[in-house]
Length: 380
Image (cartoon, rainbow, N blue to C red; front, side, top):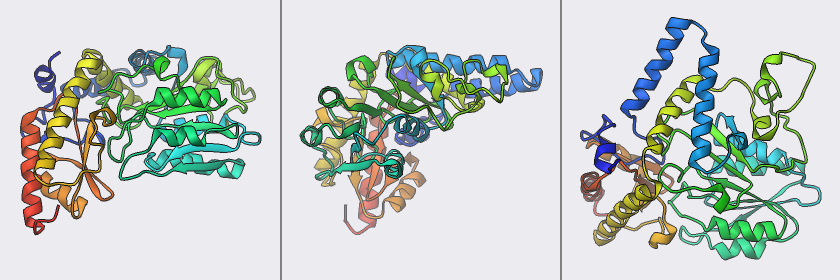
């Protein structure tokens, strides 16, 4: 499917330039149909649980195929934080207390790591320098005390990419596990968990996977041994969820042991539809398209005198360009009034790119930013 053909499935275009997939992907006609299917099934069949759970399994299988994993290596969870907690709880911090992460980790993930300090963990944050984290800093801090290395595939803050495979190789050499938050990349970047060589990976459907909030996936590498069984659990984490035995706590095999209660069924319908759309694209072609747009956008912003927080080196930049502006929230509101939707975070606004974006979207965004800067007295 070409970018132009892909774009036709999103009714928001051309009236609005949707440049906030890092926060929420654009709504497609496929997802609207899927949500209608959910509502119809509820109305016609009253309680079609078997059909609904098949939809959850379809979403799980589609995500597994997308990241080149087996379906039994995927647990359905509600959000990335839940997935991170399940990975964190499985470890023993007595012999290896340190968790290694960086300052551009998504706070919700970092907060899960910090919460392990009550169990004896010590969280070591690698600082960033002007929006960049030096991969060598991971290697320099890795030793036999590290139990878990957390490496975002793409940072939420500015689109920075890290060499996950290289860091994972060194982490495993030191005996540490590797956790990857892929939320800001999967769907627009090729992701292969075998190549990344990670032990855990988490992502959800609401951003570049084009679904709705409420559905996420935790990849756990096959045969990964846990020091502790989950304490956050529920009936879908059992060997047979439909045995309904309140006195038996038998954990399922594989990643499904990390499942908890009933999944968000409407989100499963939306997630399946979004994942099917992503499946119809070539991941390499998608990322080539997104990278070319990011190059164009970055160059135009630099020529206009804007200061960027995102990496200038394309090899270190994901599907996002982050721009320093005065009062980011006000800037986002100003652009929204002009039909350009972006995502403010901290001291920057983030312009994120998907396969459905084109040069017209970039033109509208740059024009809007220039007008906002002029209104703000020329301060970028």
